[in-house]
Length: 474
Figure 1 (cartoon, rainbow, N blue to C red):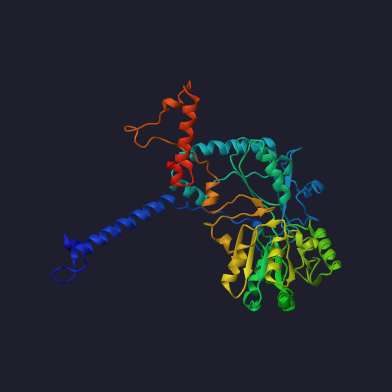
Figure 2 (tube, helix red, strand yellow):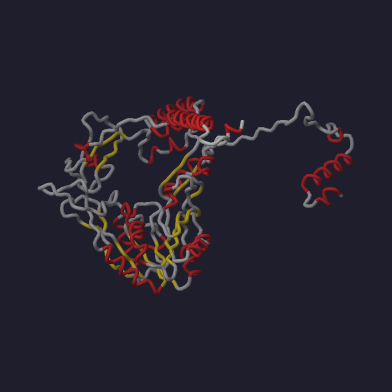
């Protein structure tokens, strides 16, 4: 038998039986893995790119575009629209061009879609794990509800909805949580954030400047885990401002879907906000901070595009010398605004970071990784990156969620998957043929003796739960 387990033949040379056996075993493993992969592989399908995504696509330009623009300009309604039914105006916020006006789901529409999902779930319950992976990877069919807030409770109060994961504002999140109590529907809330980035003393600013720019201005600050507060040592504060000013001043706003008459497409760093509905509030917060002593280094106002007068653009903004008690330092701005708060000691930096009612994500930056980790452990939040930005979201094996007013529960990772399940405990006798649970005569109804029953129960509890072996025995 030795010849089958050694690559070298006892008499010298290559052991052909071993080589054949090993190759055969590897082949079986490869074939099996390919079979399993095929069973769970995504079904290939194509999705045509919508016309509004093409360069220089044109349409009706909406003045002061909004979801309800069709109520001001009825020409935006589809030709076959139904009188009395609600619609939603879709538009490109970078230029105000009308994309489509689609029907909004009424309560009856939502109930029909919930019923369809309910019937689909019956088949889902009997499907294999491989089939479920294939569905999730393919997403060939899904049920989408598009409605106004007035009809949303048809979804959040439905007894057929078994779990709600809500991602959005704190205000709406509270309404969702309240509606979910009607049927005690389990809910995960991922709400607002005021994520801090603590920069420790002696940090190499040049090394991480690019990450900090991405942390604030990616998606124009419309990012739940975007960096909203930079907590910087007082001795690095001014140099930090100078470095960020040079970069922020060069950011270019616009739409990559527009080109000049000769076909030249301008390089764009930042697009538009999703709407200009919050611009007045953002300007108010910035002016209030300036009155309270903050320095508006650059930006701070809405920006008018030369060619897209109905675009929703806000200037990339840098504000220095911010105090943690200012309104702007306590309010989620969700905008391209970089706030810089100076501190004297690391303990003070931690206190500033934790001094917000939000607690979603955070990051700690410094030359000593062990110190960064130690500081990160002190932060009241759901996730922390060390010398990095948002990397905890890239790894879907990690739980994602916040604390305090940033919500509760987790999605992603084993914790998120368990939250979508209802664990059931089933207890049985391991050796029923040998012993089964029965009621001792001392405790059997009707009770024969209160004294004996009490002595039996107290003794049993001591044996099972006493703190020490001596107490269990005695």
